[in-house]
Every structure is written in C-alpha cells, then in structure tokens.
Length: 354
Image (cartoon, rainbow, N blue to C red; front, side, top):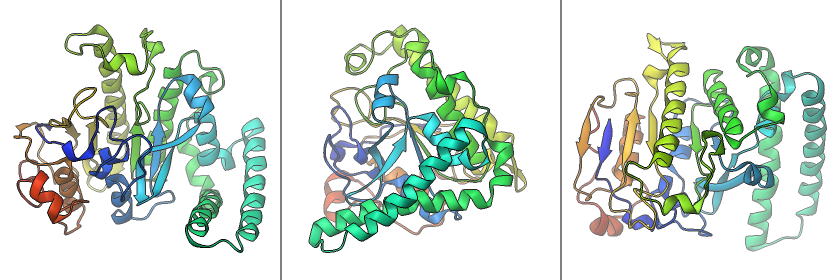
C-alpha cells in the first residue's frame, strides 16, 4: 500500500527530523526526544519478547567503526533515546555470543564480565547525586542493567537460538565495502525476528542523519552530497533504492518462510518503509511518502495507492498502527492544540485500515 500526501511539517525535518520522524513531534540535530516513538510503543503492546525492540543503523564503514552505537531515531520517552547497533560483530556477540565458539565466545565472556563489574561499580558511585544529575546517572546505570539482563535471558534459551544464528564469515571481520556490513546487519535483524528474540525491528539506512554510503553498489559519492542531486531518473538514486528494495524483498521472503498460526510470520507482520526526512533534502515536510508491506493479520488494505491532501500528519498513520494493535487511541503524540493546526481530522487513517 503506497501512501502519498501525509505530512510532517510539525517535525521540522530540513535535513532530518531525527526522533521526530518516528515520534511525530519536532526533531532536529541535537534536539532530544520529547516523547516515545512509534516503534517503542509497539514493543510495549505486542507480546513480550527477550528484547522488546532492536534498532539497527547503516552508514559508512568509518562511521560505523568510530561510532558503533548512536541514538537518532527511536526513544522510550522524553529525553530517553534508544541506541541503534551498527557494528555487526558487537551485535552478533550480544545476540549469539553465549552459543558461539572460539574468539567470539572469548570476547563475549570478557565483555560480560566487564559489564557486570561496571554495573556494580556504577551503582555504588551514584550515591550523593541529586536532581537531574541523579536522573541521568540512573539512566546510565539502567543501561548496564538492561545489557546484563538481556544476556542472562538469552543464555537461558541458548539451545533454541542456535538454529537461527547466522553464519559468521569474512564480511563481519574483513568487509570490502560498507554494504557487506549492511547485509549482515540485515541478516542479524531478520534472525532476531525469526527466533522470537524481538517482534519490533527498526532499520535506519543512514542512521537518521544526513550521511550514508553505498560504495559496494559503485556509488562513490556519499553523505550530504547525495541529497543535493536531482533524484528523478538519477542512476545513483536508482541503485540505492533498488538496494533498499532488495533488502525489503529478503525480509519479506524470510518472514514468509516461518509458519505462524494459520499462515506465516509475514501474514502477521507490517513493514513500514519511509524516510526520516520526508520527500527531499531541505524539505518542509509537506509530503511524507510511506509504503506499507503486509497486512498485519488483515488489519491493513493492500495493493493500493492512496493520495491524501497533506492535511493529516504522520501521527495519524502511527495512530492507525496502534489501533490495529489493539490500543484505543485517537491521537499519537499530538495535543489538541497542535492538532488544531496540523490535523484536519482525528483517529486513524480510514483509507488504510481494512
């Protein structure tokens, strides 16, 4: 289902709306999230999993190595960003280190011991802090608690996870191009869904920023310059979008291969393909195109093109997804005061729900 004509003018996108793209609120470089994002809210209402929500970010090799985790797109609440993983070696250790052998197992055990010690040390050092400093330090300590808790939960089901763990090859340790890491990051995300580790996966093909690199596709230019090129009929943009489309096809095929209920995992899934920056660079957000893949157990119409009039915000789509998930909600992250200016209606998008 292709949807054209939603808007995100209230998110102030320009180069990127950052957290605002999935939160439906003002977002910009350096602006902290003002509320939870739709992916996190979904993870709360779907059946509980070992890891409620997995975020993956793809970028140039240099950026992914220098900053293996960044937080730009997802959040669990105001001032509470969720980090995305960009180094597949670190992510593999996190998900499957407990069932691995050799060097991966050694690194996993060393990292586990270190995190346990850091958590205990951090707890004792926070005494005496007050106000905002105490709150921030609490989030810091909780981060280690989350990491250690996840490791313990994964260890308890290690036998069941073994058959889902991707095979580690030289793309992990000696990538020729950044797209090698992009490909194995996707494999890890798919394996986390198929194994039931998580039910919510967020993938940022440029980590929510104005960068991104695809040298493995023969695209030598990268980052900000790509946004200043004309996009229609541009062979560079065609290559990038075809690559993204192949990723989507792989995700669909993998989910469709897993029996679930009376059908497959894909029958019960919804893939939302969109941008963190609406329709083009330096955009006002007047048109925010979206493509929905799958019908989420019959909740969404498929095989359609819907043209809207730019009077309903992306929040209305997120409201629709939550409604389909059993949440009685008329607005997502939008006050009545904001809605008076940015939303011509209320409730979900009637054009997309079946």
